[in-house]
Length: 393
Image (cartoon, rainbow, N blue to C red; front, side):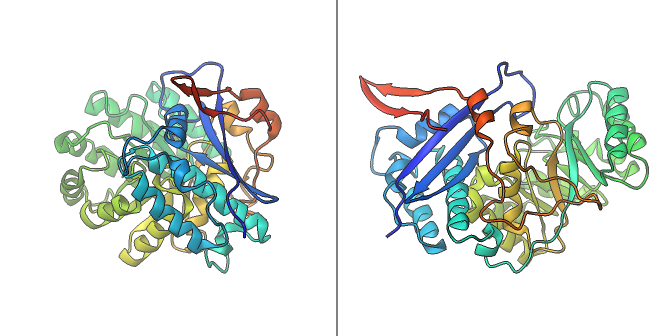
């Protein structure tokens, strides 16, 4: 019987980590091995905290290390994946990093199963085909409207049909300054490209602050306003949605369980649910959210701001949905993130992205890049070695 023999972690980091909203400056990769097969995944979380969740000593019966629910488990099909999810969440219920860690492990397990059966992950999920997606170039606002204008022009020149600006100074300055930013973005893109705005939860749950920005967003015809509030502020989202009219709301990247995402769709009046496979519990959980979204008439879209390993994993759960046409596509990732995979998902002649028709995720890490950015980690408690990262690349 195929069982999970080993799980290895690789903490990668840029030489300098800057205090900016760029989650691509470090990465936590997960390698799972079962017999002669292996798969790769990625966690969207602080690497060292997540690694600790794998090996932390048991605190009580509902606070066990995630390793206790993974190592040695049978791995034959999706049913084994579902059972492992249930076991992990039961045994690590009070370990709040569980879902972030489970996400990377789950992605690696799906990649392994796909390679073992020589089948793309989306086919293992029961999908007949993968539809092309329209990538939106995801980047930070410039420090000034002029800088935003120039960044928008550059994306238009590169042929992107949709562009998202977020974080930076937006929402932290005056209403007028924020208006200048979104108008600069529209001017740079031209009238036809889709413009998306990401507030990065800057207003917490302050409805009045968000509502004050709506007129400018209507003027430039945004496709959505993303994350005006923290993910749990359902009533604030719902109240703003009633005022927003022509400005649809998007959110959900902060959800680390399928239940949270379902609650957002049911109670926050979202038009778009954005899910990060590296946070929500991996491909298994993201696929469930995609199915629930389709049943509710909510548009599913991935959240990805890091590597193309994460990008491929994030597209698998909704690959067959012809109506969910947008996908987040990182264009300002660090050299670590942008060079991690040997075969990144490039835009085709139509400016679209299509998942590769290759086993597993269809992409794999570049071992030389792992060697270049690898940070060795040793975790010990009272002289007992809990975890030491592998030097086998």
